[in-house]
Length: 173
Image 1 (cartoon, helix red, strand yellow):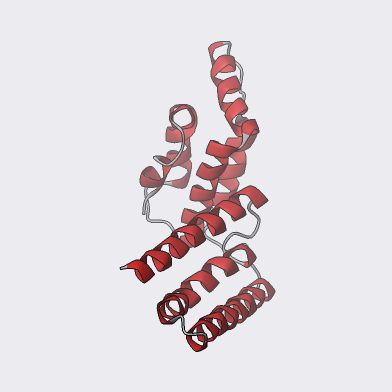
Image 2: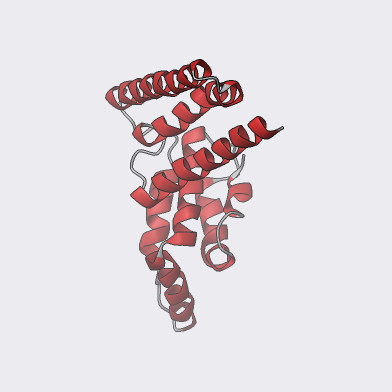
């Protein structure tokens, strides 16, 4: 994905105020997975954080008066997204891998218990989502490191909810 495609995820006020500047700093090249996650995390912050929304509103008002409001937010995004170097260490990767493996074992164990209890469709659905769910749960320890708790919760809760909904629907079909 390119920066221009991901900037569309931001609120229109944010795009109008910062979009072109942000694209110019990051460039038109394809992004690493970490950069794409950082930009999407910034979009979640722009939609959910009262301080970000206020800075965009304030910068628009100050812009008419010659001010430079909202500079700190755009500087933070530039610093996070301008580099392709990962922010996680080998230790973070090992913790993430441990969480992934442990969560996989727990979810697969739940699927096995469901099968033994006679809930075959639930067991199949649970076993089918074991790895994707574990990958999602392990993201805060590596890919989402350094993001706000609100962003981490969003990037874990929303995909998990979708995955659980798909698994539930698969038992009803």
